[in-house]
Length: 251
Ligand SMILES: CC(C)(COP(=O)(O)OP(=O)(O)OC[C@H]1O[C@@H](n2cnc3c(N)ncnc32)[C@H](O)[C@@H]1OP(=O)(O)O)[C@@H](O)C(=O)NCCC(=O)NCCS
Image 1 (cartoon, protein in one colour):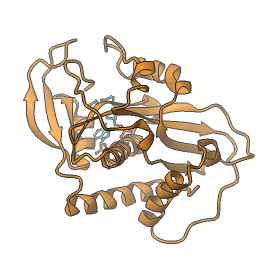
Image 2: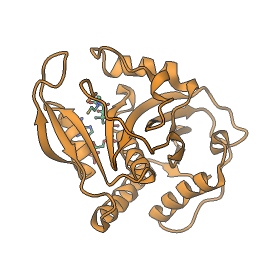
Image 3: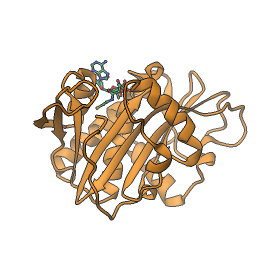
């Protein structure tokens, strides 16, 4: 990762199917939002990619990527400023709230700006991270994922992985796969946490320095044990935000 040598092709997926979730960091009045990338995000994504992968050549052409129907470009945006009015606190478990919140956004077709709330002083969004996932023949391939240095170790990477799994499910995929540098222990740990296991290697996969890649794959994401562990991980992730004074917001 990022992918340099091959690109799956296929049909049947849609950028538009992604579910959405919103987390509000109330202590810092920061709203973290997972969503599909739009044309407005291209310049910021290009800049962030340069920060995260300074040696990558050629750089990702996000303008082209967001138009492809067989993949999703996911973004975590951050908006800081005065927190806007929020809906009433939700009852029920965190998991129920997460799941319910995601469904609410998707089913009601709530405009994204509504997710931020009306009123409240808000600054321009910046982008904390992105993920690109391709859908082909029942398999989702995470082609690229990156989080800005300033936003690491806060759960943004996990939010992106949760988003890729969610979009894989929406696009009828059974498993997710990816390549990762052999030396990238932070990324290995992130993927292992979400059930990815090493299933092979690609020798000299990365063109800049000939480093080998590990191929990592999830089990069948529709399998009940995996679905249960994912529910737990999503709940832990939401709890972690809650512990830091943040809260999941239903919109
Ligand atoms: C890998 C990367 C995406 C992780 O993003 P992140 O937002 O910092 O990750 P999170 O805060 O969500 O961490 C989730 C899990 O990932 C693992 N992890 C993340 N950073 C880690 C680090 N520096 N060391 C060890 N484990 C790490 C941990 O298992 C962590 O779970 P924990 O907090 O319960 O220990 C980020 O470090 C990054 O963008 N790196 C540069 C680009 C890159 O390597 N992309 C992946 C290419 S395959």
